[in-house]
Length: 260
Image (tube, rainbow, N blue to C red; front, side, top):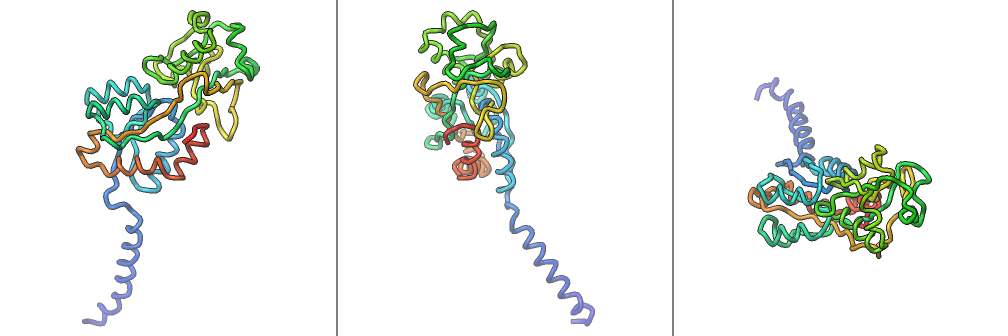
């Protein structure tokens, strides 16, 4: 071995060690996972997806919308790997129909319904504004497409107010659109997901009444691994399903007013 080679050996060894150390923290097969997400879970899922990419190297590509619409898209071949629904019935149905992996389904969050106005003082703490009816429009999500819309209808029926309020209803195709109607003033108030108006342990703005749980069926939101992910052996999809159960993800879910 020449003297020149001997002089360079320590440098080469250091470079090899540095490269090995740097790559040790990079996942060997980082990939993408296509995720269909119920509109009410938009804000928490964006945060979870960012944490997931930082912690695993895998990228979650998110699409937001109504659970009913996602069901139709999935059954017609949409290339989603994971589905985070706004209910527990739709993922169970996908399992029965063979479009989702049996045994993969679990409840990632239990949602809360809230009557909300973007304006302070419009909605009182007991929801009496519904009985007074002193407003022109009230927004809800389409009950056949969005579980939060179904919960809103159930609440109005329990209160004996649905018939009186029906002429004032403005229907959004998702809870995201219902929220938009209220936030832009196209409806004075509306039934939305608590997660859309909740931050730091309190309502962010406007006025609100959190609907008591006994006025509607529990809004259990289930996640399920879809058959397309299983067929292509997507490790990213499997890791996302596991990540949703971690303490870090559950803390995010709880911070938006859900029960994880």
